[in-house]
Image (cartoon, rainbow, N blue to C red):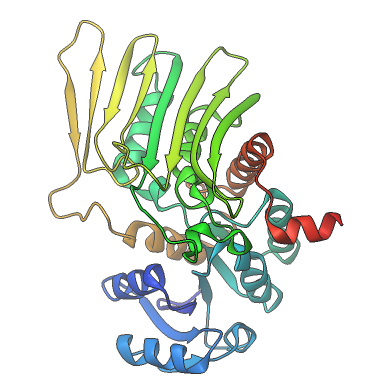
Length: 334
């Protein structure tokens, strides 16, 4: 991998635009191509961000010899296809969360990447956030003792119209894959894959989850109480309580600018993001990908593939408990 890492972007929606914009400020990063289902959309995106090549087919971008790594920013249902095309073409991949529609598809992608010796990473930017990394380090070092409980929520008030993608089961709509992936990933960052999964949800007429509560349990006795919603604006906070203290994260826990460590018999300690850092920046995620590529790594130690697979298994278990099935899954079972 040379000094410059050349990116290709698949899809042209809001998150793709944010990523392309932020790559402009990353040393050694260059977006050289974009692809969409339609060439007009790709060309408009390319013109907007000064990208030299625009493709109306994902496979054309995957075949571009000037692309080193592909960022997949499609809806969930297309992650398997888009990332698979890139891996089949020998490209490294950063794929948006949730990694795929379900654990089976995620296992296929991971197996493909490992078989080809190619880099693959889920775009779990929370794991690359400097304060989340510091929090995880404190927990690992025993700052709050043995973890007993984790609480986290992510909810939006909506309302979202029936034709909105968040209400569309064909594209993996619902609260869980878009929002619930954050609380689940946060809990599993600290405790690993749970031993038990319980869940309850309000489903839409279309059959996606609108409001979901999740209770995860571990043999250690630890538990996580999590929620996600597209019909209620929740606090979007998180806390981790251990036998010797607690860590509290304020609104926007998945991109924090601060958190508070409260240890027994000590004054609270506040940890604050560096003053020059943007709490909502995707740069640490992009920089981690580039660091790994330059080091010849096929997985990121910050966002390991086994961890992404474990999260997908938990999300599948939640959907199983609440009765959410996506059309593609039902067609495969028929």
